Length: 256
Image 1 (cartoon, rainbow, N blue to C red):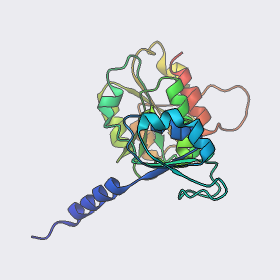
Image 2 (tube, rainbow, N blue to C red; image 1 turned 135 degrees about the vertical axis):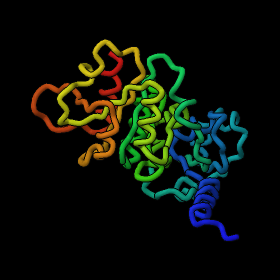
Image 3 (cartoon, helix red, strand yellow; image 1 turned 120 degrees about the vertical axis):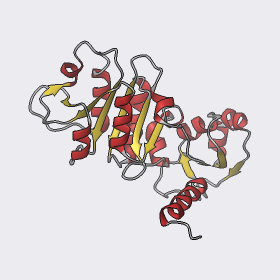
Image 4 (tube, helix red, strand yellow; image 1 turned 90 degrees about the horizontal axis):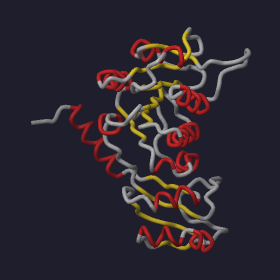
């Protein structure tokens, strides 16, 4: 009996995901990945100088390093990448699902990203999320930034510690969070209420903040699914914030 097309496509996607690897680069990103016992490490390429700086992490990981000439770095990464003499091939991290990452923490905060595809923005958001104690950063499997070397380098190690989940459908994830008791707020510059006004005295309840890509912002479906649209309280008539800055400010505002 011939398998349905959707079954074949699902099996192909699963096989592709199983074979997917990522090249991380830069001393911070590589060191933190080497020190992460949850990270599956496959191949390390370093210059002599980088090996000396990463000696403790390399020993901890128990991985054998391939030595490279600094003038002809052999790892298959973009030649323009600021690799600092270190590159590590790894498997993407599997953080699990929404419930196991978002439930159970006191005053839980979650960030959802609607079509934010720039890895530098997502890396910066992961870094802020870690510093400000977010439970997770959530994007979509399509139309969001996957794990890449550029994302990891911008995150400066946060990718190894801050849950970064990628879901099939953002609206479904929002509904799932709402069913868990989260107040879901969508950031929109034209909204009437500020984050603080929307929360009132409810800072103790779990909150999810949804941010859209710079320019188009939130999709209509996302706007219709969130509990309320809110804006960041601003002084003066300046333009919009970079999405990574907006995420940090919104996260801080939701906690105070």
